[in-house]
Length: 318
Image 1 (cartoon, one colour):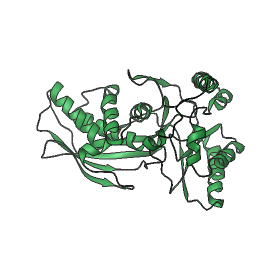
Image 2 (spheres, helix red, strand yellow):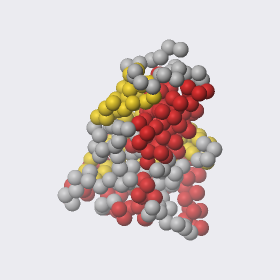
Image 3 (tube, rainbow, N blue to C red):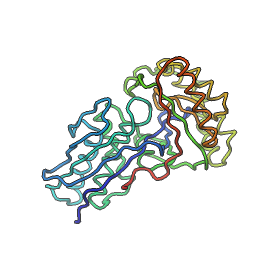
Image 4 (spheres, one colour):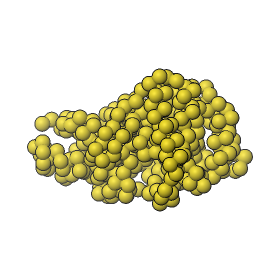
């Protein structure tokens, strides 16, 4: 078996939920991608030698890092089931470009980059979809929770629908041409997914559940029909926004500014603290981004803005 070395893989940031698709919808974002440079190691296993832009600090120990765990699990599997040399090992130089705590799927990007790195180094012994369980488990061990929808989007690109987490029943949805996404986040407010989950309501009303299901179904229809009006009508959350938004500074004001400047929809990026807006095109995205940032600026809240198209390819070797 020819082993590849000294190459780079990337895995994109993701935007989960899209309002109506709590824990089921996610899209891959072009603007931000984690990177891993892979080289051969003299020692067996996965070794994270460097983490660049490691703020806030994430561990470099292999079995405490989402990229390291997912990569090690996959490597162990390939050694056992595909006859890969037991002494093979790889060094990872990880560059964190997807920031943590803003609802951009940071740990999912790392976990996905890890499995792509090992699979590529060993000649792509598995298909992309076969890598999903290893990335899920890597993120779960490292972060205490796994987000199948984020993993699927980061790995496969585009807009992904997870119908069932247990069976990994995952489907690709059509992509609107020209859609642009804005994510604005307060710099000094990070929200970890596991912390946000502790605040979730234990019960929702039948009316809320019905409306959420109707919107998620209509979003799928809107994508297949390329119907912008219907898409806009679906981009709202009846389950978690009311709870999670309380932890995000000036959420209601930022959302109102986005909608007033013709955003198709606006809501919480993942579990926050980022706020996303869906825009018809890049020109309107710039105008909407300015309006959203102005709310924070006038209230003296330091913030950052990301404008991105959908990343269609997903994680890959570069």
